[in-house]
Image (cartoon, rainbow, N blue to C red; front, side):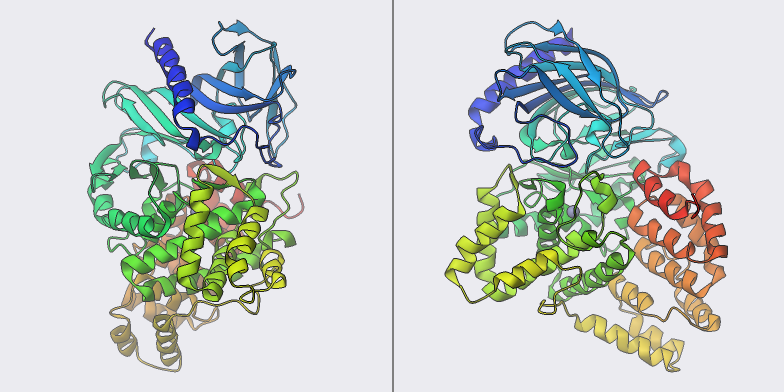
Length: 630
Ligand SMILES: [Zn+2]
């Protein structure tokens, strides 16, 4: 009873919203940019609002209930709407006109493909512009991870979280799963009474202990930003509009670590315009979360591996916060334009870090990013994936995921900043976000803005062929403006002195004030072939094998693998079982797989670790460890 009243209220609110907030809604005349990964017939129907009523069943590992979609009908003659799904069990489909009653409709699911799942085809009677689908997600849904209590910090309650980017929303909601379509949404979420649900939306009703939560998302968002987490979650405020959600054991440490969030928001607003999403909270997930962070609007999902105790890894917050402009506001129209989300955001992240922690810190991040870019390019097997314009036809965008759109994109923007001047470039970016707020953006549109704004005012600053090289090159262009860091040059000098026979005491004296980034650079810049005695001396003095800093431990384990420093292996194994963040574990599997005894070890570790990993991390490691002859 309550749910149907709620649904009716939700829909009425949505219709009102569409009338009131026209600035939020894409102009109806504009064609929706087609993404290669969707089956949706957006020329006929474009979704504008979603109403969810879902029950989380931790025993069955399913979300089940209904999803209602309200469409803008663009083709009055269309008789079918096509939605994206993956592994969903569809129970019943109904359709309706805007004001009319629900009637049962026929539907069929196309044969599933591994890349995209199955298209759901629903018969639409004349005038119908709403569908209601009763369904359940699969226990193996690619966009959900169901954790046992043992996989959480508290060890007492289970945990569920979603990760919809790039095309995994379809594994828990039937919808038009593409970044060019934006919906507002309402959700009713039913959970076991002892758990709390959090969504990337405003919680409009629901208290801990009731097992019933209502959410409303008034700003239209693309499907990949729909997000839910359910667990033993508590909240702690950091400022009037920022706060942290975490399991009780992590709450205080997380709030301390992220206490500069409000300062970062003010910096970002001063540079790029008002923050348009109301609150900005962070939700700390269990360590199996496959990413560093996910910029779900109003509540960033973050890995606990950035809680280092000294704020040294909070550039992640700057990054996810920056997505509130680049990505969430001006959104890549297709996944081939991913650099418009991530290159812009990496550039913005460094600007926020510079303003908050100083130029020297931002420079270190830039240099480390450049090194990651080179490494990432070497690991890619498809040549076009090394450019800013990958060809994703027929592929799950996740297959092409790498550092390239992040770092090559950020270098491109740094180049433009250097050529046009920071003042002009900042103005250009602010205008870009204002003019494309709540809209999809393409690379062509970016080039057009560049031409008509920055280049028109300063025609000799950059050349067309330079811009094309940025987009198409598999390497960093020779004319790039590269990041430099005095601090990291000093680290290299300290390394050289020590390698030339300097004492560990002299090194310790220099290193006593090193930050996480300086340590990462030092370890990463050590030779891949060293005397084991030297490694042991380093380890004994600085306890690198036992480092509680996940990033330092990561570079140390890579050095250990290269040198077969087996004393680090037991700690590395524990690390690889505990953490599921792809960036931290996948390179370790890849390094190990280069030798036959390493491969044997990797296979043994993976046998213990795989069940604890997210499906996305499993997919990445499966590829590395699959027998070469299969
Ligand atoms: Zn990002």
